Length: 146
Image 1: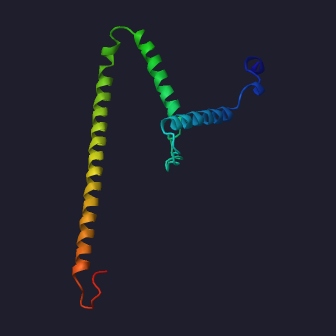
Image 2: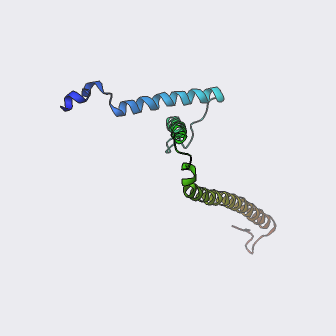
Image 3: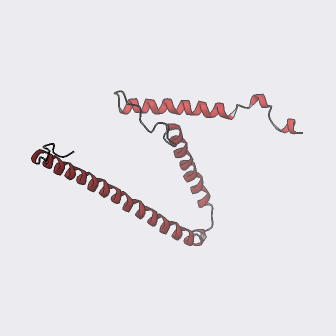
């Protein structure tokens, strides 16, 4: 009875072929968008092989998000009037966790930026001091700083 209910295997397209065809199509679309936005030759980015950096992945995520919003809104419209009040604890916990994560990310970004600027300023100061000493100080052997 399996052969009666399922389609023949030769009529089904293989999954990897669909996957590769989608990524080839999405890559061409992404390249054409880049050419439209920046007509000059765009250098190959160093992050080209990283996860989630292909245009096909971004397009799939955006499409899944929009489908979730569309179908989720349709489902929420069909719910009873007290459904939103029943979800209050979940929404409250979600908002608190989002505030903590966003605060952490903002603080970490400022900390990394401050460290980078402070580190670069320290290196510049050290090089100036070292260059000043090298130019103005001759050691006992007359070789200067090394």
